[in-house]
Image 1 (cartoon, rainbow, N blue to C red):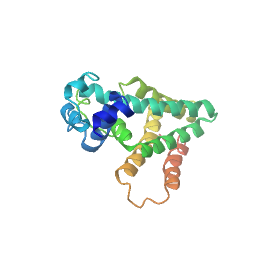
Image 2: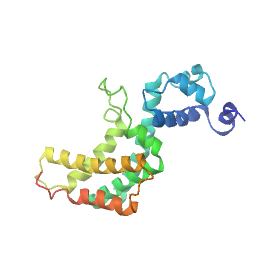
Image 3: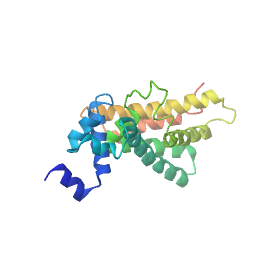
Image 4: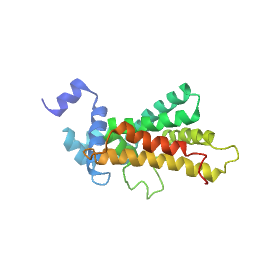
Length: 204
């Protein structure tokens, strides 16, 4: 059965394009993927892909938006069910690691991908409303864990410290999955919980 038949019977063509593009971006990087290469991969002409996406940038941003929307839904649910901002922050960060490990290609595209969009000051995370909202949710939790008189720059540093710990751990686990990391649950708790517990206690 060829790819075209699979697309017709099992999933819409747009979904087939997105799934194939996500895998190609994750494996080869943004610069090495072309619309023609993608078309060859799924067995369609480039013209067919252009009916769904005007260019590679739009396709890439669509993929990142999917990832941010998925993460944000989980973040919103955790915040709505958790009264303690510190506990909510820990749950959010643990969830981000888990979701990254469950969907490594999506995480690579959403958070680990270098692209020429950075050169145009069109950061696909900061300038994406969903990505920005996700960041703001986490920053708000951090703010609530800080003393009332905390300076804005200290809140920013604290926010970035927990994000750096979480992203660093997730990236390492995705990049080196066969390394002997030890029990991952203990590792996540050591890295994330320690970073969150330090909020408001360090001499920023």
